[in-house]
Image (cartoon, rainbow, N blue to C red; front, side):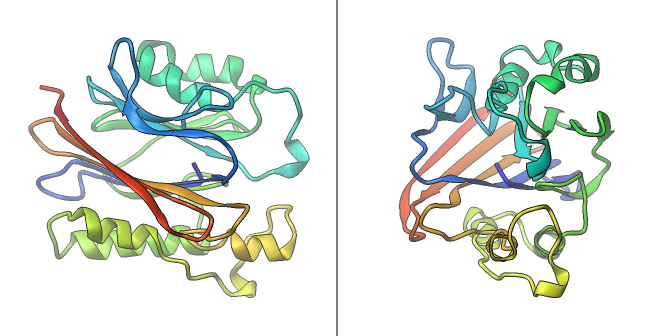
Length: 252
């Protein structure tokens, strides 16, 4: 997962709204979002190469989402798969504590982990080992720190805030925000250790590239009564729609 926009208590009817894109190599085998057997408690897509996930929610309303931190100089081979952090946070939320993350986070390449329940959502940044509670309002998590002012983070946050100030959440409208392919000007690009051409490619909310790009968009809505709506749309390297899954359930 490469970018998440989160609205906390920013809409009177929906205290939690999450819009997220997963960016990954298109050849990496993946299962669409589904309830994982045998317990059918965890709802998420599944990475078939390492067995983890990038974003999900369980029937109790616990949420977890992952982004890689773009720091090539810190990347090491043979580290544990970061996707298991999402599975752990949803399978046993009590085990995902700041203390555990600080003790075991070095076993993974750099990451941000969004985790928590409804109004109490946190973001852990593995390089600084800092955890921040998401305050009411709008937040973005990408491949740096929480609420970094990267062009696509600022653009998506502003678009979501503007939309929610005028409209009831509509899945198609939220998907449209997440499929914006506009790239930033070179002068606005962050310097994250990758080549300039890739900085350009990665600067859009939706990344369209035959080898690596946006594989899926997920929209999570939670209303005041604890009803959950989870929608996932999948794409190929040419930006074509490969399918859509929608789920509704209640945590009450």
